[in-house]
Image 1: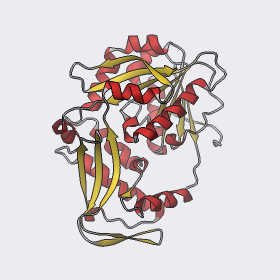
Image 2: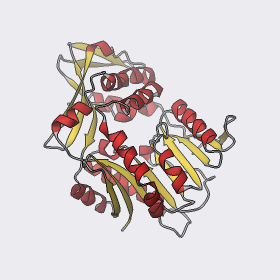
Image 3: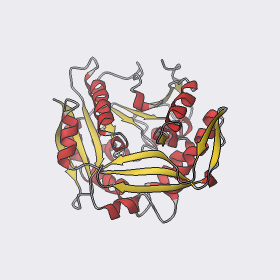
Image 4: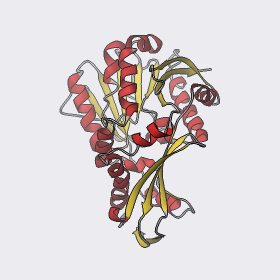
Amino acid sequence: MFDSVIKTKSADNVYFNYHKEDRSDDITKLLQGLQAPQKTINPKYFYDTQGSELFEKITQLPEYYPTRTEKHLLSHHAQEIAQYCEEQVILIEPGSGNSDKVRLLLAALKPKSYVPMDISAEFLQRAANQLGEKYPWLDIHAICTDFSQSPPLPNELPQGKRIIFYPGSTLGNMTPPQAIHYLNQLRQWIDGNNSQQKGGILIGIDLHKSSQQLNAAYNDAAGITAAFNLNILSHVNRLVDGNFDKQKFEHLAFYNEKQHRIEMHLVSNIDHIVHLNKHALTFKKGERIHTENSYKYTLDSFNSLVNKANLSVKKTWIDEDSLFSVHYLSSI
């Protein structure tokens, strides 16, 4: 359940909902991943305030093509996108970050309500307040939660057609089976309300391309992606009383051509032991923690994926270099 709605002082049109989670689950989930033969940390732990700020810097890097390409698609096709979505919808954005991309659509779309969802409370509230001040006509219901767990939507939302805005190719962080399961959850969000109007999903998907271009995007010269990857250890330390030392790990990212995915890892540079909430974890020199996947799709493989979630692609927008795609989906 949600805590009572807190109306922010900085903007009368912004409401902030904090969805409480049982933090004792963190140690269980983290140990489950870090005690596996292939050590892993769920990428949701990237996003404390520092991690969110580092990711915003990544999106501005010259090597990182996805954000600028997707933003161009959204701004260039905003009017046509609005025709598919229709006006006065309830616009829901899981993993909203700084809500930068939605600004490209607001004038054309004119939603009845906007629901940004993010796991970092401080970052989300700051972004929601800034958006509320810039768009005083927009009703904003910000929800701090782990959006991957499909939390309930607040009762205060008005009735109407629901549109999920899921940019950034975030779906690519999931394996194909996980992505199908999550798309099924989103389909229930857009179809499972009292409105007679079936909703839709506006989603950004990164496309398969040369390994050289992909490897460059995740190994930037400024080292911002490396800092983002390593910051996950600092976040884990704070959450579950750990003593990871970032100096004992190095960033590794590469394109796995067979799997069509970027893999991000942290590589131990010495033999050492880490303590996590009184649990000892042994690391050998060269041993990896797998922190993230980023799957890349062809148009055909993405179409096949969404069909397995009982969704269909109604419209696709793609840049002239075939780097990135935006799709409008609806239920079959």
